[in-house]
Image 1 (cartoon, rainbow, N blue to C red):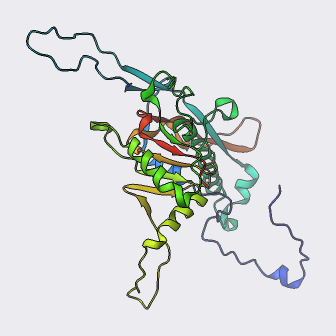
Image 2: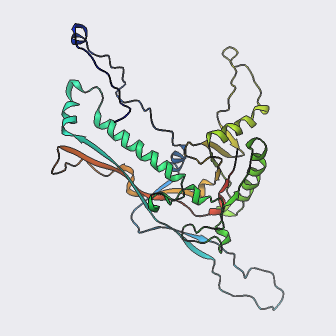
Length: 328
């Protein structure tokens, strides 16, 4: 395969009598995978469930229309209240396989084992699965014949009144619409005002709906432009050790919302999420873990297993999230 090291050696006296120097710490060093900060954030806000055909959550989308003032013996409105429905999410499945041949197992053993090859393959499989799950979280769920995660592109739609989401049509159910602003333009001049409006709109609600967006996700380019907005506010002071000056901002926040960047986020997009109303739901035994011990195929000298995921990204209050698009 492409990318492996390739060189030729002539084994004369020196090479025939000298071992290579292995400068390893017992593991291979990752040179390929991007960070997955959005997936990591949702792992902290995840739930594991036991069974179920679909993932469903109840939502309230209308007020009780009988609420109002009255006087004396006026007849009271006793019209039964409705206004409740359910959102349905199809569980999506992902896998990655771990395979090791008998030849590899016997060669990677004893004194010749510098790094545990099976441990490496397991780590590689888990990281590969995390990589594609991260891509799914930043998708709309239609990829690979709609087998991919129903991700942020669908949850925080740029045209929130037009596309059915979780089996609910936002064209008729106006409560099932996220907040959105498109064609925002230059981050340096337009982000603050647009973000303020959408943040405040997504903060509306009472009781369990009273929280504010607390996670902002965007691209590296937009994140750096937002960081640049803080430069006029910085004050530089010498540290206790010499005169070192820190010119960077380690943690960017808008009010209580932490802002991160993710390489999988679409260009020019900023998401504001209220994490109390968004979670990654996973099925037990399919929560990015091995499906079981290695199994030997009857017709191969090898051992095989899979790391599996089954679940989806869900929300029980779509209007608590927002998207800004068209940022430059």
